[in-house]
Length: 78
Image (tube, rainbow, N blue to C red):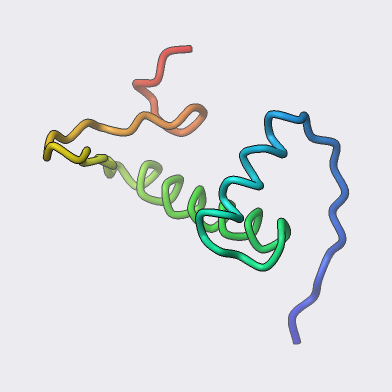
């Protein structure tokens, strides 16, 4: 049996807009599902980066660029 936890948080309008965009792009049923999906994606990124891996984004013209993730990529400069 999986234990479920209720998490309440305050988020800015900008963050809420990002969650709604994820929900719409993924045709997800609600914001909760969008947030869970975002957490799963960040978990994959964090796991890859903490194990010494790198992540690349390939744009529509075929060029690739390393993805630097704030808080996880040691080369990320704020």
